[in-house]
Structures are given as C-alpha cells and as structure tokens.
Image (cartoon, rainbow, N blue to C red; front, side, top):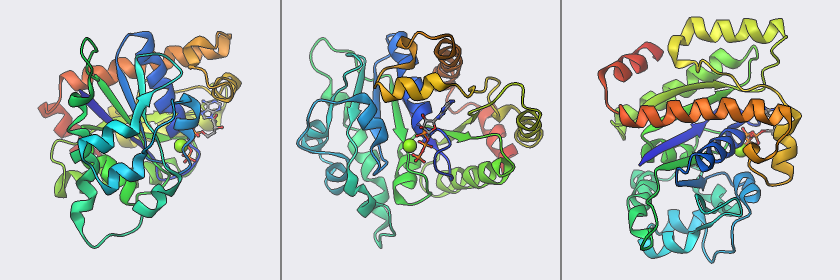
Length: 277
Ligand SMILES: Nc1ncnc2c1ncn2[C@@H]1O[C@H](COP(=O)(O)OP(=O)(O)OP(=O)(O)O)[C@@H](O)[C@H]1O
Ligand SMILES: [Mg+2]
C-alpha cells in the first residue's frame, strides 16, 4: 500500500483536483484506492458522493480504533475501486495546536488498521490519497506522519518557488522528527496554459531550483476539470478533448506514484530530498 499526502501551503491551487484525478486514473487501472478527506471544506467528499456514514474524519482523529475507522469509510459513487474516509466540517477543531504531540499520530494509528477493513474476496487498498487542507497545521502534519510520500501542488506563479520551498521544509521537518519513511514524490504544476510565456518561465524557474522533483508532466488549465467536478464525475469519464488531455496527464502522474511505491527507501530518493532542502 502506498500512502500519498497531497499538500500545498496555498489554498485553491489544485490539491483536491490532483487527489480526484489520481483516484480517477487509479480506478481506470483497477487500482483499489481510498481517498482520505482531511479538509474541513470536504470538497473531495462532496465530489465522490459517498454513501451515508455515522462517523467521519473528526471521529477517527478523536478515537482511532478500528470500529470508528470502519464506520467512517464507505464506498463512493464512482465505482467499487474508490472508497472514501469522509471529511468532517468540524475537523477544524483538530487543526490548531495540541499540547500532546501524540495526537499527530492518530491518523497513522487509524490507517494502520486499513487492511482489517477488507471484506472477503475484496482487494486490499493499494493507494491511499490524503487530501490536505490549505495550511501546515495539525491536519496536514498528521497526513505527513501517516504518508510514505508527499506530493506538492503549485500553480506556475511568482509565488510558486517560495511556497514549494516552504512545503518541502515542512516535509523535511516531519521526516526528521516523526516519520523517517516519508519521501517527496514531487511537485505537480497545475493550471498551466501551454502558450503562456509567464507560465513557462515559472516552470523553468521551478526546474532550475528543484530539478527532477518537478514532475515532467504538468496539468493543463481546462474547463473540463471544473465541469467533471461539478457533475461529480471522474475526469476519465468526462469525454471531452480537454478532459482526455488532463486524464492522460493523471495517468502519467499515477504511474510515477505507483513506481515510487515500488522503489521506496531507495538511496536516490534520499538524495532527492537532500537536494530540496
Ligand atoms: N487544471 C485545472 N483546470 C481548470 N480548473 C482547475 C484546474 N485545477 C483546479 N481547478 C479548479 O480550481 C478550483 C480549486 O481547485 P481545488 O479545489 O482542487 O484546489 P485545492 O488546492 O484543493 O483548494 P483548497 O486549498 O481550498 O482545498 C476548483 O474549482 C477546480 O475545479
Ligand atoms: Mg481542496
């Protein structure tokens, strides 16, 4: 199982879009996936239209026992490959400082029981996607402690370099203090307009500084992304030329994500993180 935290410091840059796009690509490949909605806005949950549950993320963070996890995880309307640990609007209560540092490990504790949720004849989860809120508070830190990989999302703007740098620093800090297995998966540049010189300049700037950590494939800015999300549909099923373009990019990012899972803890990854500090 590969657990990926999708994060950015800034709001609205495409974290949820990346989580949903990867879930859509995973579904197409038959990769059983759990989306964990850590954001009190619950956008991923809304798009995946889960069956009703008696518990949600807040309950799991308050009490990470398997029975609570089981009550908070349910099927999505997308298909049997994609399940959801549903978000909670009151998850914000878990985002501020807490005097007991052990609270940060509650998500890890809960997710360690995921295999126990697999019913007879069902495949275990192969991919767990953690959709983080737009801050580096306790919820995002919990995700970084529970994850094997951190996937950073940015738009190609003047603030991209400093935002990505700070997010890498947060990944590094969590790796040093709480989660030695955490590795950066890379930076996805989202909402790129291919003919924009400014966007190309910003992507080149990111590549100069972060090298191969910047994903070779960027996500184009396409109306289809918003249309598919508005209709609660996987982007791979939207069917317009723009949707196909975005879906193809997600296939490539998923392939890299799954490959990274197979080569976890390799020396070259350690070098990549060191290069990002
Ligand atoms: N590649 C894209 N093309 C067109 N629209 C996009 C693209 N990526 C994201 N959007 C749109 O931008 C808005 C913000 O995206 P999204 O919700 O994924 O960001 P986020 O980082 O999760 O936001 P938040 O920080 O609030 O959680 C959404 O309306 C989404 O549909
Ligand atoms: Mg979001």
